[in-house]
Length: 468
Image 1 (tube, one colour):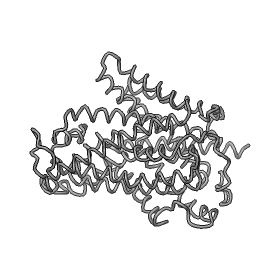
Image 2: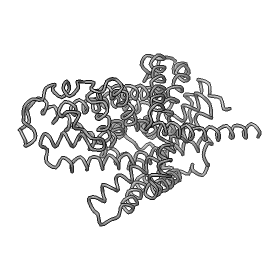
Image 3: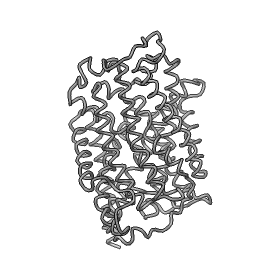
Image 4: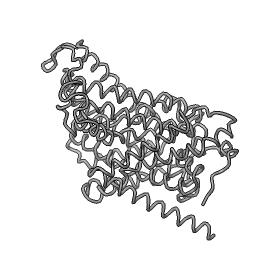
């Protein structure tokens, strides 16, 4: 097996061959908007339906876990910025097998989820302009974002900046309108009386925990994966002018504001409307905006969700290409993927990622309930596996980073090592709950199978290297 490098080697990295085209504003907005997607705007309705107002606690628990993982990842990325981020950290901390496994699992997850986002965005566009079939919209989106990712990295940054800006603006406006509705300061509409809502909807309809703590736990399972996506921030930081400083600033600004957006949104929703009125699959944001009299609330939120899907598609394609490029740099992927354009873009890595993305889209369009369903289940718990390896890597690397830096890291994990161990316990608890739940058990089993295949390949490679 490959052994991690000693502390003195951690700071002596070779320069990243990719072009430093991302600015601080790109990274900051990527951090803020990276996790604000369809999972929040639409998927949060399922969590409210099972937990009631207790969904606020569910989001607090899931958000705290995501925030701790992000802080650990930020600490390592600030000390050792690299396009492979946590894959590189895992290799340095745990060995070559870990970097290989987490890198390929994460790449696989991104290119499969990419198909879901492209198909969902195409369905919305087809509803607006039915003359163009859904598959054609998928093709348009894939071609556009492939082109954006093949050009200079600043194009990706600009796309994500404006996409994220729209999502953040939508959340801020929603929070503002919701607060005015709670205080009774909005003009009365046909459905909204204009009277202060107070705490009626929080304490009535079964109380704050109408389904008990079991509902809160179910809510955690429903919302925890909505926090996935922040990892791309640390991957992108390697292509900024000052990676260590940029990732530190972006992580600090992102984690607290994201919690504010998520927790604040849930408080507004369950305060303005009775939780019993929520239906899984429908956007609670649309319900609230419609209730307080915002014209064409459904159409407005549909545009926001559409932008969120395209934003996620763009970010996932970027993250997948940089991850497979980093794997190739370390000899864990075909060396042909190392070709970099004059502008510093790994074009073959982009094309390889989008090619598998196209295959996933075709499977989703043709066999959504069979082949693609199995593919989707096989990445259902991968995010938790990635988070666990991030925590384990931080446990191993923290002391080495301190020795190399001569003191405490610039962006240090809180309460080390206790909060790191608490994060690992939280990740383990979520996996146990998923296994115990009939709906999520297949995701854990299929994802474990996928991880087992990648680990087997890693072991065979190690045996081959020893034989050589």
